[in-house]
Length: 218
Image (cartoon, rainbow, N blue to C red; front, side):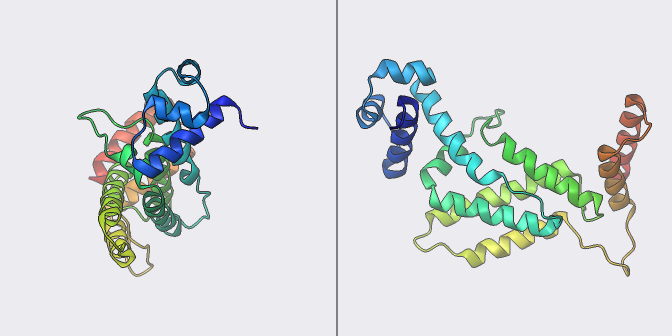
C-alpha cells in the first residue's frame, strides 16, 4: 500500500491531468488523508504541486549521451515536445507561470543539461555561438513549438521538425574538411576543451584565457 506522501503526489498528478487545477480539499479527499498530513509532507499546496511537477519533469530530462551531439539534441527536442503533449497541464505549470526576472527553478536542470550538450558540440567544432546563448535560443524555440502543438487539435509534428532543424542550424554547423574552421568556431572549441581539461593552468589563467576566447568567439 502506498504511503500518505505517495498518495498525495498521485492524487495531485491525477487532478492536474484531468482538470489542470487542484484544491487542498480535493487532493486530500482523493488521497484519503487530512489537510495536516499534506502540510506535514509538503508545507503548502504549492509545495505539493511543485513536487509533482518536478517529479514529472525529471522523468524526461535524463537523456544519456550517445557521443553524437546533433543526434542527442534532436532526441532531446523531440522528448521535450512529447512530454508537453502527453502532460499539457504539467507543461502549462512549468512554462506558463513565468515571472519577470525569476527563472524557473524546476526547469533549471533541463536548461543546464542542454547547455552541457551544446558544450559537447563545441568541443567537436560544431558550435557557432557560445553554449549559453545557443541553449537560450534552442530552448526558446522548443518551448514555443511545444505550446503551439498543445493548442492544435491535431499536432503538426512536421512543423516541430522544421522548427527544430532551423533552430539547430542557427547555432550549429557540421565540420567539413572543405570548410576550414572560423576564428569564432575555433575559439568556442578551445573554450570547451579547456573547460573539460584545464591542464596546468591556474584559476587566474583559466579566467583570463576564457575571457580572451569569449572575445574571439564574438
